[in-house]
Image 1 (cartoon, helix red, strand yellow):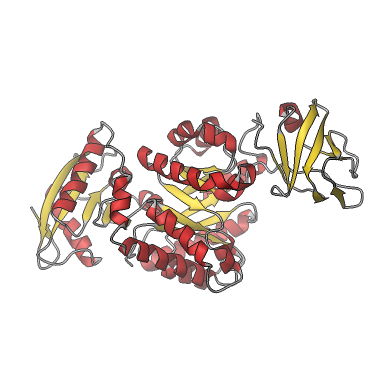
Image 2: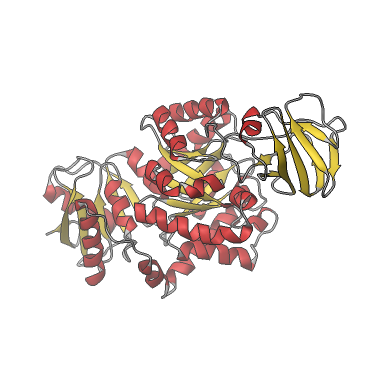
Length: 478
């Protein structure tokens, strides 16, 4: 099954999309990899979903990526004696360490790390920013705040702290248990929520020990200030616009999305744009025009993937949401201005042999107007390097490693095929042509470009470019 677009689609699974038939339909509609949200998924259900995805994968013979999204630290208020209160603009409201039920003047804050870190002038956003407080007096036992934007407040509502750097790990005890269960099950990507610093990613990687790749979700203002270090420590980035838009002024989010997309591409790390992309399709069979433009913007920016959340997990039209996203991607990439826009954002190659080879292969493929750029890759790094260049021809990645193939499901433009490793260079060239011919990328008589590392099978040795002609049976020769 060949996609007719370069950008990838990440679909979240949930109550509306958890059985074999529906996951199969989502894959056929365009989903390239699937997200399992551990905020709502017990371990048994997670294992069941992974088994079902692997079933679909084996029936289509195409590697499908699985991303497990850890919940991260959820900061919440305590309970109120009457279940809820109405906070008025200008009033004083205290958050404290007293476990007694709250009232209109105070409530328990069961997070001593917040009280320890808060300083006068810091903002507190309650219930996704619907209520806003400003700290006026702080101590380790309580914080006296002034209500700037009032409203109804009820038990266990969330607390966001855009100005406060919390000395807490991005992983809770629940996250650690969820992570171990996911790794044992054999998932491909771990999304780390509420990352504040590179150390959060490094901590997770020490636990993961190479068993999965790590995607840092950027949803905290503190992460923006340390973005370069976080990108360097991570394997991929997710622009989690929902929480980012709560803790930062909404008007800043579009420009930050562009900056993060370009920074990730410059670093050669996949970037996913997430949250509310086709939000209206939770209830409606078609999106709004603004949502279509939002998705198209991410495609024009050259993002690696776009994500559906509740649209595919709990909405009434999960297949239609994936299909709509698929059509938008195809249509944008047919636009004559698309490649010039993506090319204009192309970063200079790093001073490594692998980047130099990838840049040269892209230039050769475009100069000769070749129909496909083929990568032989053991770890997937060669394909990632080539994808960083955003070449006009499709990228066909051939790997003997199913794990690498599944991880490449999130990478822009990569059609991945898992096949036995080449015996030698002649076998590599011949089978590269056969695979590209079989999957419809080339016709007999056309030429392709092949990128690989020699000696074969050794990760990180991208050092070879070959141009080969495809014969009548699909086999290629130099």
